[in-house]
Image 1 (cartoon, rainbow, N blue to C red):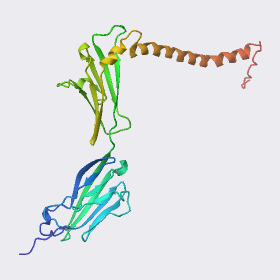
Image 2 (spheres, rainbow, N blue to C red; image 1 turned 45 degrees about the horizontal axis):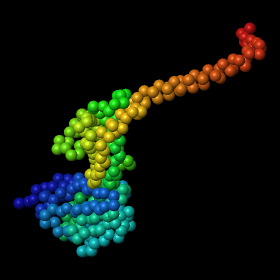
Image 3 (cartoon, rainbow, N blue to C red; image 1 turned 90 degrees about the vertical axis):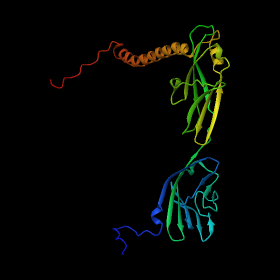
Image 4 (cartoon, rainbow, N blue to C red; image 1 turned 90 degrees about the horizontal axis):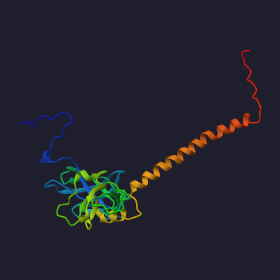
Length: 284
């Protein structure tokens, strides 16, 4: 019995080759600046490796490491020179990581029968999350007496960082009592209403990315007490006074600039009793 005919461009599979994918993609690896990342070379069962080649594909294509005739080699000129280590299982370790190490990598494995297995991996390197800064903004009335309730806005900010998420935690409570309706600006701002029973309640802002996290804690009732002290005004009261005054000063300055040159020119032209000569009519 003759084997079935092959279509144009189709290769005759070797024994077991039909179960062997040629390219495996989508593996993602995360690392932190200053740490390490392990790029694992996966292989199908029974795949006996004869050769292996690790490459960097993006942002530039570079040869990183090879395995040939039982010898491991990583001394190739690339941005990872001195930072790449090829282990006996042919996984590639990069350390210490730098912020510009993010990119795509590939490993080509060839077995003793000449079959190839290619795997691509994506490495994303994150910086360590710095400690966030939390500010307390109090909305109070003009009454100098301490209020029974205090509405505050807690603003959280992490400097010089991207790809982070914000979350809030009420310390010392089983029920965190953080309602989604009280969160603004993707969780950076939290609105809470406090009473005299919340004098010792603390709130923590937690900033995190896939590899690190940090937090800062404040006790907002202390700001409510200071804000309501005699002789102190809320930020809303200050804005109500300062903004109108600034607008009047700006309008007065614009008016003087607009009318000053015009009035001065008129005085110069007719103030001395001179009569401006009539312009000749070109049609006469």
